[in-house]
Image (cartoon, rainbow, N blue to C red):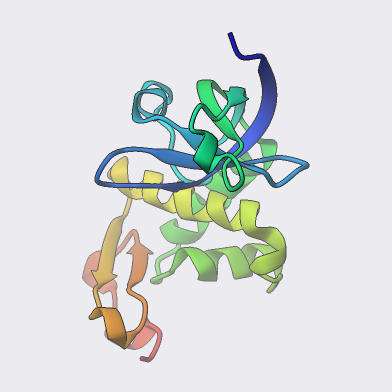
Length: 169
């Protein structure tokens, strides 16, 4: 039997087709594979932080890139996520149209996205949770693959949303 350890991870990505997740181990930056059944049981989404039970990745040919496999997840409520959730609710309730990145910049006073990736993930996750809870509307502009990234905006007042409030192309 392989040795198991407990580490703190943040979920960095999830494959929509399979439900498979991947996480980053806090402190080391190492990658871990999260089987779909583990993701489903924990209701995990990108940006969530968990205490994870990990073991060595059973796929030897994948260990160089992803050394661990997660066998269990226990959610950690990060205090910064509580503050983020309150900020999002307060800001969206005051009308306007916002992206998660714009909310992040407003909250941090323009901090670098690259230097605060966990906090940015919290904004992405929390704005989407706010939408799924029916507390705001979400507008998505899909672009062709070669035309740039898609954009997602959130608002609590979709009837008052003005196209001029949206970022120019």
